[in-house]
Image (tube, rainbow, N blue to C red; front, side, top):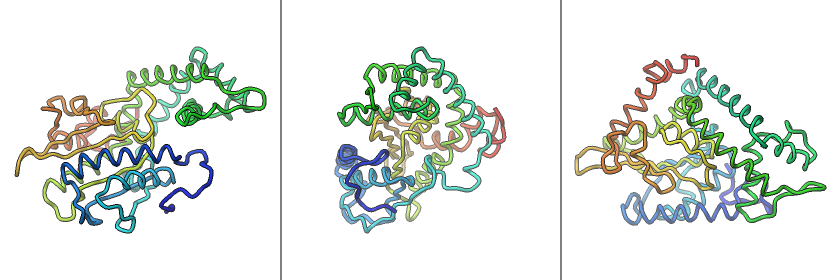
Length: 327
């Protein structure tokens, strides 16, 4: 596991920067005011069994979690927990549920179509070649469109001059061309549905875990977690939103958060789920919550969809069966 705080004197590509730390501190403070101060989710005497903390095996997500927890928890005590480092960008914990043949096929099919649209997009191929030439690279060495946009966004977000090669520098007009195409490409991706099929299978293990933890807490099971944290990436958030039926076509903002809340109507009453994306209640947009009432969705509807309903689009009745249905 990594040190509690970044140790490098200079942030390398993919590391959490000071500005990123501040974003997570603000996120933690905001959610602390809502869930800790107002709703008393965790008491000052909280213990290790109350929380489950997970991160991918990258220093950035670990340090992002630490920054968030510093302002979120009632009392920050790094010795009072264990951060689980999961060897999966989508928090699949290994075993047969992470192996899915049809998921791989959907991903390859979508990746091929996405790459074709990028390389044939008006002005996009030309701009990518220009950028490759700036750094003395071939187009294939430059990498994907999202890799290039990540380079731009890192500099723009931190108000740093765009990088330069030996003779020329990157230009805002190049970024504008690429981001416009990125959004349009994602719009087409959402309409075609191939990525949504991939996402439904890719995120099912993680969503199944979320349902399981909610049901455990709702039933009063001893040791049920009150708070679960996943510290992931844009490639975690994007398929998650697609799996829920709320695809995001724009660039995923830094420090994005997706919150799943579990509510009870009254003492001993029915349980409901609410989902917020960057602070906005999107519950009534979820594909399994057409009957959403007051921005709430019955836990039973959520559980039924994740356990069985999601597989109907594949002509299957289980995850294992859906994974055998080739596209």
